Length: 529
Ligand code: C2O
Ligand code: CU
Image (cartoon, rainbow, N blue to C red; front, side, top):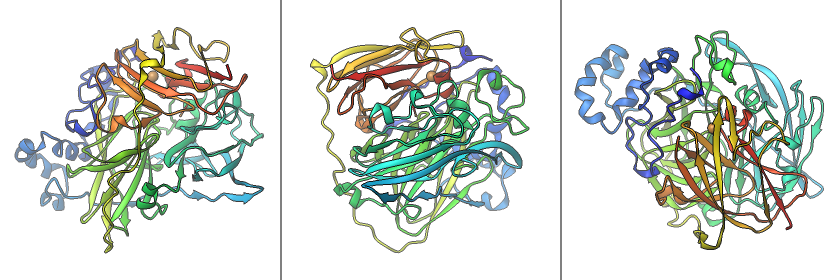
């Protein structure tokens, strides 16, 4: 099994509000891939997920018989709309309080190693910020200046990148900002971003996958004083809930894999984690003390696409994409997140509802699994006001006078390239040079049959075309990370505002972390021109 066998999810990306929920990602029939799945497809969660799918109604009668064989007595009475009983409590990452001094809010992070249970009952070597797995959530405020003091105790170089933040290249935390074990890196910058959900993770050359899969990732909430923000839930851990989803590859001794040789090992399993807790056979519970709850979902997986949906087939009210609010709250049946992507939605709940994630693609295994990761049970008597009819104004770019470029994602053997160069060192990577305030339209061409997750640092982009089609629905929002299916292409537009540097560069790359480490990364130099 190698990269070349990746089916690249023949499904392709469809417009978000419209896709049928069953069958997505089930297109892979590679027997050589299915055999590595360790029976995951058979557990109860997958079964329930299938039943709730678009084809589920017709299948319900027949499925019911099997249902009773697979589940306990209570579930025999259940309809597909019932929520799954939670057997553990959702862990909400700590909120890292900043300290105000000298006009800046400072945050202290230490990257360290530890141990944790990635696989239930098995101890794995892990890493985290200020803890043994994942990191605390930082809350930044638009217009504020932040100062981060980040100490590296990992025993290896690392960097910390603020994924999605519009900040100077020197503060961006890319490979040029790597710092050694025992050192402290102290970037400082003004928060120019409006309300959105960002995240932070390592980004040193060649070690990003290894460090992220061991747990180095955390969420960043940017808060602002917009009318939309005022109208939406914003009390962290109460009605504003971070959800970090991950699908990892682990062997039976708990060793978390991050490269081709690791993925070729026998006996791997692919645990799914929600905020660091394994949800393979556990559904987490959250009691909502307000009728309306906001969820910020991050796919921090090294490769897999994680789609979020309701177990009862209902809709999610999506309010934001990677880079902030949609123009209006949009009802969607599912939210498909490629590696690195985020989305926000709200739920107004009268009854308990189970959230599921459908895990698809990955380069090492085929098929999909559906996991009931969270049951939200309302215990609230308030009556939230209607959501504002408008959340944001997004002026669509007229790209007729924009500078056009083509960015080609390529592969030769296990070497991954952008525009023909493997970005495994600063000197070997392709470099895109542009100037301040340039307006550009890029065609991201996937010259491979693999699925890629294209990510651009510095500025948000708008989707102009997805595989030749005009975007609709939530695809009209702002993004920094987007799916490019095997053989497909996207056309994106952006403006390079505010920051220039003659030495430090932004990165553009595939967010499948192994692909990034193997060279699918290029540099972007923005100069004064
Ligand atoms: Cu989330 Cu260049 O990365
Ligand atoms: Cu890729």
